[in-house]
Amino acid sequence: MKYKEIISEIKSVRLYKKEEVDTNLLKELKQFFEQGKRLIDDIEVEVIRKNKDEVYEQLKDSAGYNNRMIEAPHYLIFLSEEKDHYIENAGYRAQDLLLKAWSLGIASCWITFGDGEEIKKKIGINSDKRLVALIALGYEDPQSKVLYEKGKYNTSSNVKVIEDNTSERLGIRDLVFTNEWGEKADPDELVNYGLLEGFFYGILAPSYKNRQPWRFIVDKGTVILALKKDIYVTEYEEKIDTAVIMLYFEAIIESTLSDITWKFEKPEKDYKIPDDYKIAAYCIV
Ligand SMILES: Cc1cc2nc3c(=O)[nH]c(=O)nc-3n(C[C@H](O)[C@H](O)[C@H](O)COP(=O)(O)O)c2cc1C
Image (cartoon, rainbow, N blue to C red):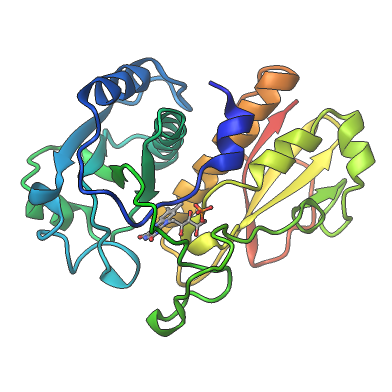
């Protein structure tokens, strides 16, 4: 997949054409999912596709920002076995599928939810697996607008349309440190390590309410991923945010440098992470 190209273009779409997606494209997506990249090998994840009449009315007041459900011709419902890091694994696989969908001309948007068991019941899913992702899918309506802006989304009253139709992003210098917390990374140094592109594209990852909670510390060949803790964010949302940035960074580094493997552990060294952040994972590049 041409990750750089797709990552530069993809955005969350909240207004869809009524028309259903071509069945051959849906088949291609299914195949991609079965063979696609995995964060963890031995976790079974199942994807169920449902149409608007099976989901939209049923979840109208129980999923999405401020319980505002997104109307779409299709929904993808990801179910996973419950094992260590099963949410991150599903988030990683789901986002990879959404990138593939975008490359086929199909738009999407993550839809957050509270009680997964209640959602499953409302849309008639009887499974022991946990609900790990709910995604709107379809062709973008040309009238669709980007609706949420960083820092302006904590109440329903300040949802607004963004004029140039692109969500804001923080810069690399806000997000990447070298050696320890607070030491802003020098882009030239990141180029020398072959990491600049990984961050350049990584920071385009989607996140819950576009909060971009990620911070990185580059310590020679080790890249540490830290995450901001916010009281209004659930553990689920935090883990999906972690997973999508892992996918973006890894996909770009692997296309330019070498394979990397994320470890969900803390490195031994003390990187002086402040109390409102925590280390989510690290990798050796
Ligand atoms: C875990 C997660 C949950 C999200 N939930 C919703 C949602 O319920 N409703 C919505 O409109 N957008 C949702 N989004 C989309 C984000 O708001 C969006 O990715 C972010 O604002 C950045 O915009 P962009 O994807 O267009 O670049 C969610 C994204 C993530 C990663």
